[in-house]
Amino acid sequence: MVALGENQTLFDQISKALKAANIQDSNACLPAEISESIPKAIIELIETHDKSEIVSKLKACIEETNAKISPLQKELKSKGKQTKKKEPKKVNQKKAASKAKESPASVNPSEEKSTEVRFREIIKEVR
Image (tube, rainbow, N blue to C red; front, side):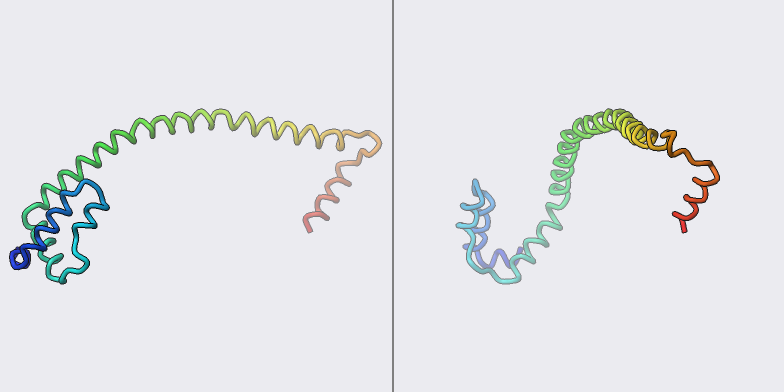
């Protein structure tokens, strides 16, 4: 606070910038350069006097945001459950289609092989 008291015009510029309606107006009010002691003094002032007010406002914003997000999360979870219920049916259909493709080749009577021959072929493939 001492550093701010030393330069009243700088304090007025910062106050005006904080009260500005938008960012462009705020930036126009601020000086191009300030000494390092000014931000330190502002941070010290906030931490000693306004920290609890700032934290309570931030907590209120968080609660408000959570209230908005909560229904959306529930909606996503319900949609996720619905798609999970639908997906196994699709997987089963894919498995059935692949089995149907494989079964005509193995059922072909002209190429029937004994179990022993098929087993030996599988062992050769694994090696």
